[in-house]
Length: 273
Ligand SMILES: C[S@@+](CC[C@H](N)C(=O)[O-])C[C@H]1O[C@@H](n2cnc3c(N)ncnc32)[C@H](O)[C@@H]1O
Image 1 (tube, rainbow, N blue to C red):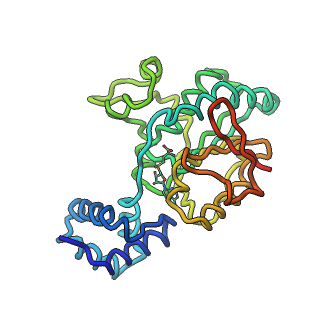
Image 2 (spheres, rainbow, N blue to C red):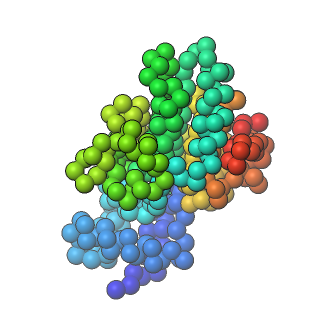
Image 3 (tube, helix red, strand yellow):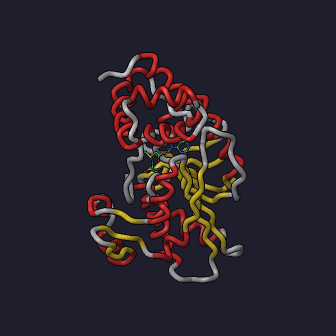
């Protein structure tokens, strides 16, 4: 079975309008295979049947199911290593001094997927601040994919997921067996506030952030959307705050006026200009 060219164009258009994710004709195979899975899960007669329903109600609940089916949720604990070394060795210790009076930190993981990124941050904060009740840490984890937000809330990971990047001492310290899986400590789960935020839409009201993780999501957008998001972030991030992007992402040639690139250890971080 092969999806028609006009159905590919229609799906790409729906997904792009809702999420800004660009799926061109080269992604035809990905579109088709994910629609086959979705149609099967929903009990639709075929992909054509699913597309027919979407054409009849292009702004309904099915649209969001299709967008969720098209997102790539690849993630892991301590992904790429260096950003988290910079966070725990330099950035958090510096912020603990510079925010020493207000004793409050706000961190946003935009596009958090299944939660490994915000929980990596939560574990590092826990290691540094421990149970010091005088610090108020606000850790906001957002995504467009509601299934991923639910996974983040639950904090349950299988053996494969905990084997990817999570150091054994942290597994022992912060996770408990949950059937065949592992669930992260309720203290860490309570640190994280999950919210639906669609980066394709104007930035919703957010608290002023000390650090923003916006990793491995800009790659899915075109340059105008990337620029709009980076400019919107300038209003959310504090003037001495930090922005982390993914390894294949940069502000360069997109919003040079807005951001300055800085190297901390082997990590690249962006600071508002
Ligand atoms: C590859 S994952 C990145 C996860 C994590 N930041 C990391 O680097 O490991 C990309 C995430 O971006 C989310 N995403 C895609 N388009 C989005 C949008 N318009 N608004 C918010 N999140 C979006 C997807 O749902 C997915 O969970």
